[in-house]
Length: 440
Image: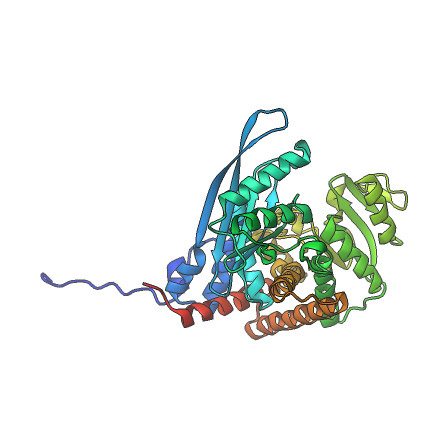
């Protein structure tokens, strides 16, 4: 057979690249690998073109920046900051900035990709981005936090912008931090640029309804799931893991819809009342005492019990990897609404599916925040601001329509809601890549 040249056939689909032996549960505690396990599964089911698969798997930009500041005691400290832009095919990057000692590049990459899929699921014209600075805000003064924020922003001036990359609040950041970012960016531009960030104070071009948006989206998605499953709203029992902005607002809105919130937890522990917790009263307690611990209207129980509580609805709204292969088998809820990003590991997904638990995935369940961030961006660019009733009505329309879109894909392909959401999102992003082609 001399002189014969063997020609290897190129792979035709993503499945050919991934390979049949890829274990989707490897490294499930790594947030980026956990996200990519779901991505790979959805890509296989879509028979995604291998070229587009490679493009979507790789973040467009990954930045590591030094953030040197002078502390209040005159010492100089250098912090590490990250910003990852995952994909901008459908529009500028969009994603929060977190200040936390646990920030890693893998975490930021995963969260940026989740933002790409989240924006595509609710069909808003943004791509995905995320950022963070490794620091402990609890041990920093307000002036030190301002210096970190401004120096971090200055390091990313070539990346940030209303047409390129738009930050928002995240873990340990808030309206005030967004105000510092907007001011720093605007000073370098020589004029106010309100649309460079969302989640700003109302006085600076922020949107009404933004603070409640993520929790409201969780409530709407939960309501639609109960309706789909034929379960009543009134009397349905719910437990909320994480009683911060998302969890507490979702709990209050679910209570108004007729659900009974019997358990809630935060970093201080958990509270339980089989007859129901008066959520607004618990929120007022936290406002005054900072934590749920000591709340007189319920008994204190171990925080980990909230995940396995005998309830109809479980809303994990705290941290990643709250539900794992270890505790998924003990989950008794019929519906899980993921208020946090990545609260369920890929290993737990399989267990929950076998148990028949209906999971509303994070990229759908908590997309209310980015949806109203989009509304804020639009209002800033128009210079015309909407009434809160209009914002809430439009948010309801987006989340309800998106739930039905994902449900349609799930039924058509006989997959769970998470894989259906990824399939819907990936196909929407892939469709734009096909239309735009590759710049060469």
